[in-house]
Amino acid sequence: MNHLDQSRRDTLKMLGFGSSAGLLGLFGGVSTAEAREQQGKPQYAVGAPPVKIKSVKAIATAPQGSNLIVVKVETTEPGLYGLGCATFTQRAAAVIVAINTYLNEFCVGKDVDNIEDMWQSTYVSSYWRNGPVLNNALSGLDQALWDIKGKRAKMPVYQLLGGKVRFAIPCYTHAGGNTPEAAADSVKKFMADGFKYIRIQQGGYGAVGATADKPDFKVANFGGETDNYMNERLYLKSVPKMFEVVRKECGDEIELLHDIHERVQPIDAINMIKRVEEYRPFFIEDPFSPENMKWFAQLRQATSVPIAMGELFNNINEFKEPMVNQWFDFIRIHVSQIGGISPAMKVARLGEWFNIRTAWHGPGDVSPVGHAAHAHIDLAVWNFGIQEAVQFSEKTQAVFSGCPTMNKGYMSVNEVPGLGVDIDEKEAAKYPITTKSNWQVRKMDGTIIRP
Ligand SMILES: O=C(O)[C@@H](O)[C@H](O)[C@H](O)CO
Ligand SMILES: [Mg+2]
Image (cartoon, rainbow, N blue to C red; front, top):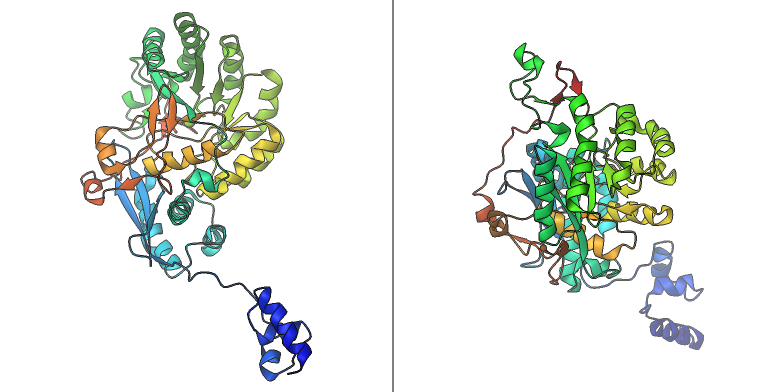
């Protein structure tokens, strides 16, 4: 080795390239057999030894009635694990198989660090993809890897997403009753708790409960014993009336929301939304089922009532066209349904360009881990709109420690590293899930509605 080679070697060392003969070869230095062998091989920086995934498993529990599924990812570092929400309440047992059988085998031995790569590779690993079962399983993994990354970085996940853009998260809660007056009373109670945004439903979805009618199909013994039903004509009349009474009784300060739950004909939904315009709803949710997206063009011409949409979408690609066309104002996504925090961040950022705000789906069929995931995103994205939230029962809090908390309508997360929620597996086992969760709805004559 001559003098020039030595000084080149020293320079490379200084630059942190070690004394690789291969690198020297690439820089035109010594041409040894070893260097030739290494030429053409990618060079990479070697950091700390990777932490690997040891196991991926599902934990199922129903402390508040709804089936909840959480993924626990254990690692090769003793005591280090992550949790993620994988709740598809209606078909929970199928998600458990996807997690314990396929996801576990796919993930064991892989690096916990590369969340995006794990998301992309898991997403296509079954070749056929995009269904709610696999997406929920994938979400459990994705959220758990964010939880692990936060724990390793010793930071709450919102810090890893860019840090706070607000101090806490304004939430809406669910109010309602079988009459407009009962709905107004329920709103007043939540206003007294400090809520500034309240969703109102009369008799639940489709005003069922607001009528004593027994549907004709049941009298005729058509369909199943437990089939849900609604009277569309009654529903379409009841909503404007409910808004009128609640506005009159609760004043103009409170923001009111309503979920149509995709239950009526698109043209009827448009006419009903026009009728509630004068009561200034904060948003009307799911006017159409995802099969009826083209009706948005007509809806947007007919009314300027803000619209929230999307809880039945499975795939982030379904949001692209409606968002670039500004067909709705709020993104309703069941975060586990589309595959976790990573894809939810992409949709949220897309919304920033089009002034479309977030409103993650947060009812009782999301685990506290999932609610925490919403909260971390909500703290970090500029185009946050509103967060749907529930009260966690004492039983739920005994299963899940560190649940997000609510104060005067604002949700907060604790400031521990990761997502901040833990699970007591023994406590979770006290509340087994069920496989009876069927949501089909019929008209009075028995016709299936596509809710
Ligand atoms: O927006 C809502 O909170 C509802 O559409 C619920 O998501 C649905 O009943 C399933 O939990
Ligand atoms: Mg909804």
